[in-house]
Length: 206
Image 1 (cartoon, one colour):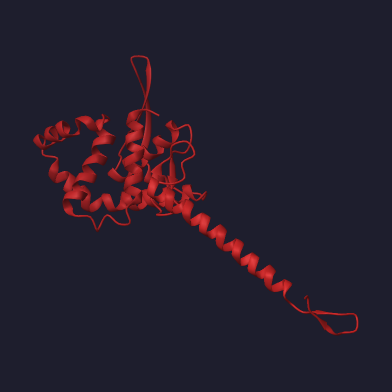
Image 2 (cartoon, rainbow, N blue to C red; image 1 turned 90 degrees about the horizontal axis):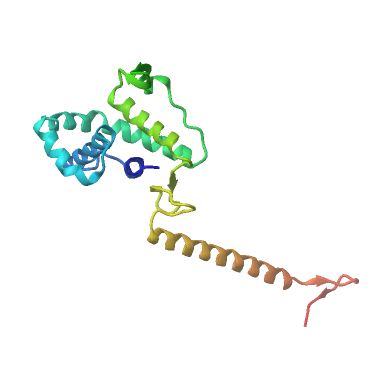
């Protein structure tokens, strides 16, 4: 996976991990929408993000991004969160056809090209997520069993952070210890039960 797709996957995981975008402040919403627009349209790395934003301000895109924050960002967040939650849980994520842009094919100078027409903003971001799944050799996302956050998986990574890894491992150890003590006490109580002798008398172990 190239750096571009890694950055896009990280941004998707960060967006889907939010409980709600409505709770974000306006500057944070604008920054998140700016990053979504940057990585999907500009296709560069985040090292030139500031320079790109300065150029975009000159093209008066700030007002357009503010409109997208109110109309598009909540929908994209809800769809991304639902899709990743279902896929990470091993469930099926159904996507209606009208959520994708209309593809078209063409040949220019003897080279086959594929494009998409009539794409709404939400359709465009979902299509970019769809492309991410296709360029990845393996499903790139995981969901932390401790905090529920989504993350870009590295090898057999199970937790989103070292702190969650510690809490998860420690919790599993305590659960195993608790189950062991429960079984131990059950066996001990069973061993103390009085037994009936052949004559029907109660016999106890000395």
